Length: 458
Image 1: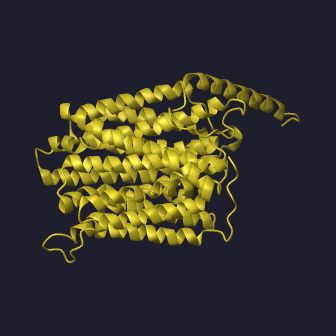
Image 2: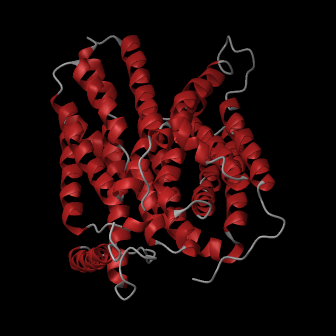
Image 3: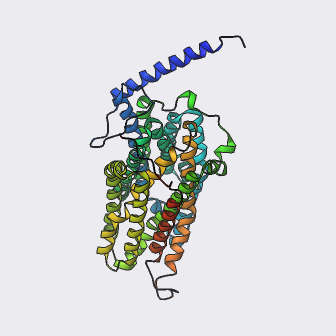
């Protein structure tokens, strides 16, 4: 190669930077910050003199994840009815098939989250986020049209594969947010989860009462519209010099999890997350059964209480993480969240009336402070070119919890209530969840340095 051959590359890079700045300016004009929420500023995704553009990028990711969770929540109350329509009213077969659908979704998340995370490290976050939006949109339309159970099953497989907005969105927020503000940014993503889970089932129930396929059509249209929105307004966050080559060795679940073994902090906090994700499965799989058996709650009462869980989760994520982390630091916030979650689960298990359970909800939801704090610390332990792989690995851990958690908690619950129970303790599943969080707290203290460096001022 001749000398001076790098000069055209430098000029091309300068041109790319100018294009990025122009795209950011377009984004600034086309998207506004979500009302009432202070979004973090970016680190290097767009030029430093365009703060609104930086906030626009973060705002789009917030909206994307909220809409994805809204769509997932919308189909939750109608999916059993749609499966039942193909099973000729066979209740046992419907329950078994619903379990298979849930397991398949978790398995797809486990295997493909690290693949999509690694692809975002190679090709950038923008194309993967858009792939998720368009893929989910087309998949929901496929499920809405499905003339047979097999087609519905294929749709569930595809939705598990393309539901990548969370790990890639987390990587995007890492790209555009200074290290000292990442806990707050991740807290906003938690708030997006809460918003989606509050509104999704309620909207899905209303639409499903008209036609069980209608929520799928609406979810598909929302995802496609969000994809078109992002196609025009979302700038790329990962610069070319921070990208890495794609490798199947790193992209498979085992390979991606090897990244988490790089050092003591990553390994320990990964264990904290997987124990916490496993504990959360008690809410998703036992809560409704427990409330019905223990309190005799109606579907309306259960739905309102779950909405309260999501409201507190969103409130803590959007409004509490930032000031709390600024005041006591990420690691103390992590410990506080785990302690609150453990106490909340014990309150659930001890509840003989619904009153104690309702008081336990705001305590339990302190966990919403723990997860963004842990992931903020983890994000500083890997390079910019490994953020997608790391977030994909974390999502794989969530998928792993989704595979084993439902079986574990439903089995414990089934063995601790009723006339044939070996031990009359209906709250045992929640006690187990609390014990898992206590174990995660012990691990969190193990990875804690002797003297923690203060968070830099915002």
